[in-house]
Each structure stands twice: as C-alpha cells, then as structure tokens.
Image (cartoon, rainbow, N blue to C red; front, side):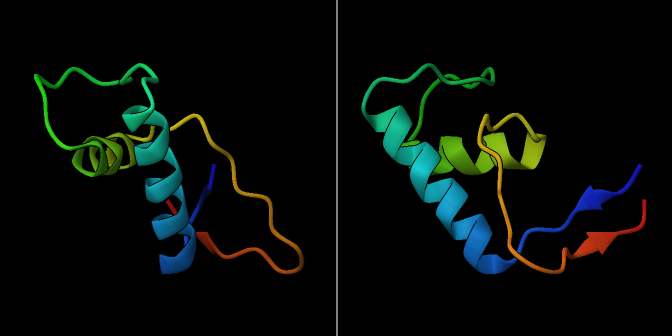
Length: 65
C-alpha cells in the first residue's frame, strides 16, 4: 500500500484546522498530558490519527513504502 505524501501547504492546512478544533474543545486523539493546540495537532499528524482527509484535483503525489 502506498501512502499519500502531503505537500507543505496541505500539511500546514491540516495542522491549522486540527489545532483550531482542539482549541474549541474537540477531544485530543493521542495520549499527551497537555500542551498548545498546535503542538498537539502536529503530534497527531505525525502519528497519523488526524480525522481529516485531503481531496485533490488532478495528479496525486505518492511515496513508495
């Protein structure tokens, strides 16, 4: 199975959107004591648990795994 590689713009958008959700009271999906919403969102993205999908038009960028 191949993973979809996010562009830096998609990555920034996902982290920003998830940080906003967390700051508005959404549950954090990883086990971390506390921290800033942006840090929690980045940790969630690194672990692959962010419940947001990316829809693209055109060619997809894929990585071999």
